[in-house]
Length: 339
Image (cartoon, rainbow, N blue to C red; front, side, top):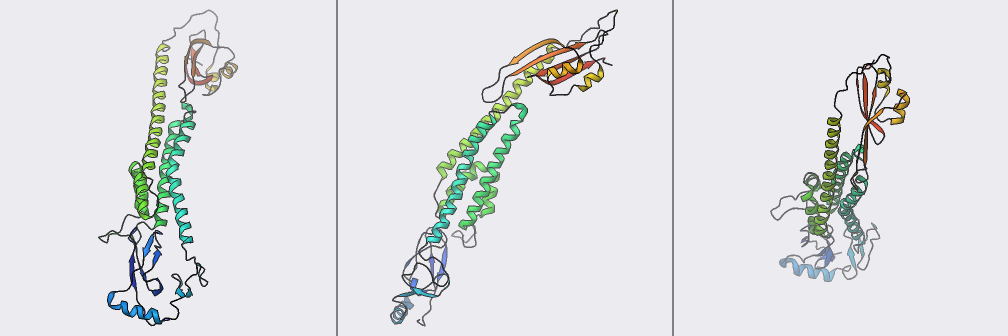
């Protein structure tokens, strides 16, 4: 081994990462950037020491067929593709695998909103309003945004984005994984495609076009489903209000010489929301008088048809109770003067 020892700095043109090389066997050679796997040229020493370096290379008995491992610094054969001392691969195979694994994380983050859009459309559109689709829709949207933010933060960490070596030309540190996580979480429509572009500066593929299209599809699907749900709620409220107005008249007392009790207060209290009309008849003991029947056609892909029937039970002394059933389930009840 020669007595000449010299360190040179090499800067990657792709990611601007700077490394220090002290193994003279790499001087003047092409290598692989340890950060982004791009081609990296290791320059020769300064001009005033170049002659000494060349002379040293000529006198070094190892220089013709040996070199130092860039990981453990032990002497190995120049043609070696794996260090016999530390076991590291020297042909970039390990780093290339890491790059592929990192690329997969980005791809998952890219297609996740598209999959969530399809899932939300086919699942939410089959729900009834009683299933509270709005809450489930917001859960899907929030979960998708949160997961993509987490995936992008993990990938940014693996790529070294915002690390100590990742600085701007002015020497300032770039935004790191935490910053990208918050950006995507709080401003997803901008942060999602922005990160898919930024990752390309670290040796990965640029998916900004796909990111913009998927972001539009995702937000469009969520907005469309939310509007459909709110529209259905408004229609139902209006129709229920019309029913209440139609049957809000006061029933006059009916005089009769014989007292007949059809329904009592205790029976009224046993009627709980959700029971069927048949169960109500079994509790009261008599069929009610059908006051009205209204059927509201469903909205395809959003809600089923709703059939509303109003029944009344009246005692001979004028006391009474009314009950409204939707799709054979008790929804509302009211009583006057029951004992």
